[in-house]
Image 1 (tube, one colour):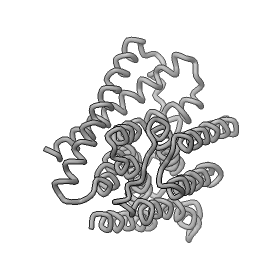
Image 2: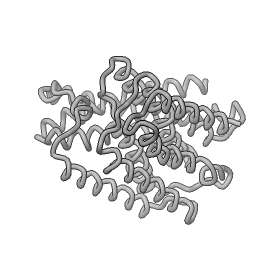
Image 3: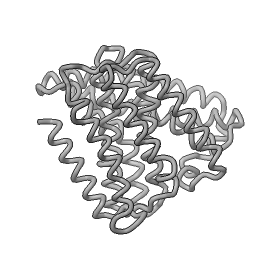
Length: 316
């Protein structure tokens, strides 16, 4: 039953997230918001909704382990699993935005999260507000400095949604909201039962099973693009997802309900957050050595291999 709840919860999150993205983009067109802003903000916020709902549900249930594990695990999975497999299928060219904006912001957000948690073992509402405000400022500066979107960002936005009826948008919002609500509830409940059944912590389940599950949309989109030899998936998009996971998902969750580090899972601060930082940091040497600005198949294998090592260690 626990496995069924996890799978059903993940399926509902994927479906709910997809409908929410469509509704959000359609609504943005209705409000005459520019395509640039839609691509950088609306789509990014909407695609972070599954992680946000899971973290909120876990925080309200008093299981901060799942809220933290979901984000830390998703960030590791985005680089080790998604980027690793995508590069193995088709080598990726690193775009300029990666080292100018996205990578520095991802590293800053990661270190700030570590400091806030290490300081007093809790991510408070004020700290969450600081993280979320920093994200808004970052997006504002990004939009100001970039008057043209990369093709990858433009490809994410379906122009057909500009002519969608108000009724459809409302229905999509209702379906999306229902899918995210029940999906997060079932997933958190299933994760708790699964952890109890196999004798490992809620945190270990969240940083592996749940994290991989909430990264499935990114993985599917990336693999399909790689198989079609399209460059629609960029390193910048994956890094952007990691920034949103920390600053938006954990930031907003902490504002609603402070996230407390469980003393029974010391590996959150002693091990796993360093895995997250290491996966982020290693991208720069990978980008520069030996062939510059290319994530080759060999580098993809290194990332994927490191991710398998992380999963093995976590589940011990």
